[in-house]
Length: 478
Image (tube, rainbow, N blue to C red; front, side, top):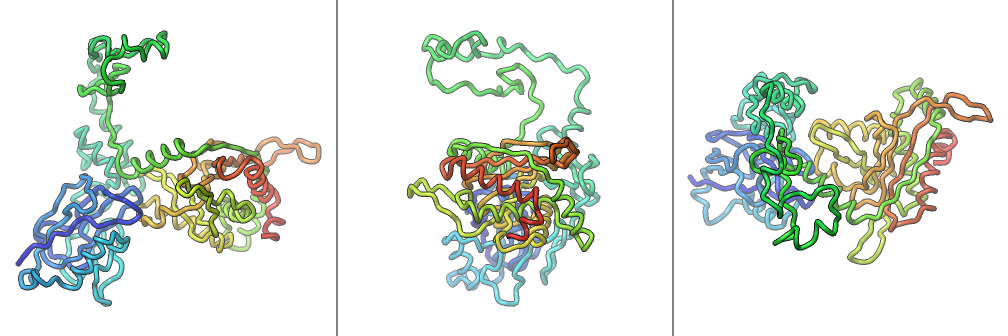
């Protein structure tokens, strides 16, 4: 018998690392080809990684919560045939090696397996693998088994750093899910009533060179050679003793910038540094839109307001294609896209994600409603695929569900624009010279000023606003 080492495969979408959320097998377990062995979290999604080898698990490379780079060892599997065919790899192994070298996005399932092998192994969290060989016992997702109900690796890491026993916590999230807020509440409850006062910043800092300047010092004084010697980089804002160097306040917790949070930070930072954005907005009377939705509901399931607005957005992008484009700085051109993959911003426990309704221009209002509901539910459950969480060409953001009226959103790089919709509220409105109560919503458009000027952006925003105010006539023209 000989052990075959399975490395973390190329997960597609240009991702180079993943966080090991949990093992689905243990040393000594028997696994089949394509049976899931680990659950990992990338910057795009939570995915299960199947084994390209069948046999007995010999070694698990890495602890839960660790970050692994693509190509690093993940699991070692002892196979019977490996000892007799060491110089002639099997067809499955050859396919696996070829896919790894090619960097394809297909390495997560079907490593050259026969037609009889299952083509997908995505399961609900905690469900047992559907393989023909013995599999590890299922784990209770609600925390009454051998693991507490925790989805986010950030929550687990925070609990480890603070010494919180997750098994002793009762989660306040859906189905008893333990959230970051639950861990922070446990930390606060365990903290002493009178913590020692932190040392003053002057006693913690080296003199002169690392002393932060007072508010009266000018920028010129801060940068003069007499006050800063050596490298010009500022000192680290956090000291190793758990005290913030700038304020002298004790540090309550540190949250690693990894996984989705890291990807969001990089995307938004790149957007702000590369895209010269501009924002325009308009208040819109959505009374007729809500009345039309009520009429549609009387004849069956009514589409959501977001789906109705999405239909108008797609129609508006057909008339103003500049906003459904990309800026290719390498080629020095603006690329207008043929078709719309409509991104829908969704807030989840893992952070903000943008699943994309592919070919939204081919869907009607009810089709858009169905896809938006499916994708947002999958995103919040952590089951959306990497392909579903990427590839958008324009983003629609309904921040009204957060209870706010407006926002200057950040464009989802490398897209060219994002349309935001606030909450719908009854407000005084002038109709035919009289002040009446109407249902008002604010729409805001943030656009890349390189792809168009204000006339185009205003024309698109006005088109969507007019469709919201007169939805029946707009639908007749679509």
